[in-house]
Image (cartoon, rainbow, N blue to C red; front, side, top):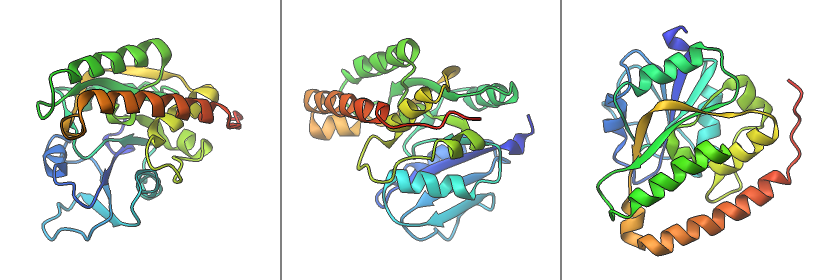
Amino acid sequence: MDKHQLTVIVPVGASESAWPALVRQIPADWPIVMSATTRCPPDLRQRMLWHRGLPGRGRQLNAGAALAATRWLWFIHADSELGPDVCAAMTAWCAGKQRGLAYLDLAFQNDGPWLTRLNAAGANLRSRWFGLPYGDQGLCVSKPEFDRLGGFREDLARGEDLDFVVRARSAGLPASRVPGVIRTSARRYRTQGWLRTTWQHQINARRLIRNARGQRIDTAA
């Protein structure tokens, strides 16, 4: 695959400050779209496109996808850390002309309770058994398939990633595990409590899955 056939899209919130570390883990010649709600920093690297728009993760992800000029779109959260060889593995997956969604195994950073290891294990099992990865697992999809699905919903305060995955599965797009680990912040579990956060995620996930399955998807290629 041509190295310029994949664009990394990163939604950046108003208080998000971890994205520079993520950018340093991405090959220097890869195009990156930072879909943000704040002004472009003065020292932005030349290869990065900074788009300022309205807040809302679904809206920001869609805006980033619209600006990408490549066949493949790789959506990565701003507070993520990429494991060794992850970029090479994702490149190889795209080069194989795969159809569907690609994702990585999830792990949590050391900024939250140790119990988040159970959450990561559960997320990885759910992804492999049921094909339902979340957005913090680094979803990658071709732009034609992304457009056919209508992108991410912009009316959801949270869970636009799972909604997208469920609709993709309903349209016949499989979820494929790419070898490698992506680490995400566990600060929400620390600030809001592990049990409360875990329980709320489960409730929200069930509701989102039920609602997404009720949406009709045009499966024509």
